Image 1 (cartoon, helix red, strand yellow):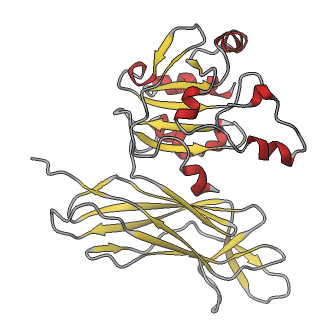
Image 2 (cartoon, rainbow over the protein chains, first blue to last red):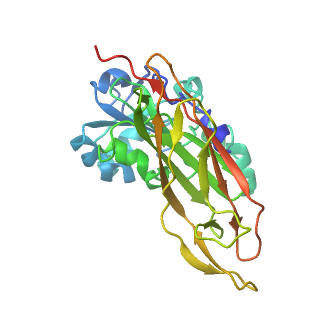
Image 3 (cartoon, rainbow over the protein chains, first blue to last red):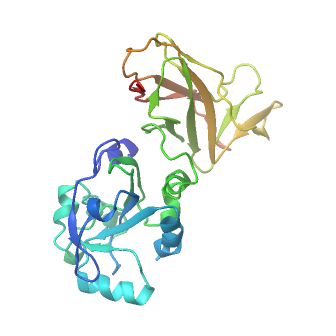
Length: 50
Length: 267
């Protein structure tokens, strides 16, 4: 199970893809740029609704 | 939302925070207003990014079936709950998956790193498991220099209701131990584990020393190799014997293989 899960998503040691998505205000956020050279936690979660 | 509770600590530690879900912007705007969310909630409506990144929860149907529930159409496209820690260069340093979304379930190690409490960067980690035991291992540095000693951490999680034997132990039983597969020039010291607690097995006179829950062992590893040896991948075997109140498994081994890069020359 763990090994199977560990293959999900970007790999440890790989660059996190440069994704762009709107935030809660609708403004586009380029994740790698918005980090501004800082470390970052990127949290995937199911939904704000359920 | 629990993340908001650590948002200030993360900001103080110089760590950015982003959350990604398949919710539309309007949903996230309402959610942020209601809960006072100050960090970016990114809206992947249509789940394109979630899909492209390989983060789609394709187990959802199965999970729901186990609880006798149907998946609603508006539940399709959800991300598998997970946390990624990105280093300053944008490289993924650690990742954690957690079927129930709660940040505290992601393991303190990742949060410690994110909050800058722990060493800023350890080597790549590997998780492997066998019956009743899961082992997460990593070196305290992603790189070695010739003749340098690194520390190998082995985090052993024992399934609830089970324990593993540790030294001192009566003859004929296997204590928790770890050893390195032979690799020229690479030598491991004795692993140090937390002390066990006494346990008397039903119907046996011997008193055993056991460990349960999550424990961390550490093992010094010396890289006595010449400059130019290149990247190495030591293999570690963790031996254990797990028992519950009613059953004992035969001794088992969990194997890890961890990449350690040779550090580039300083000058």
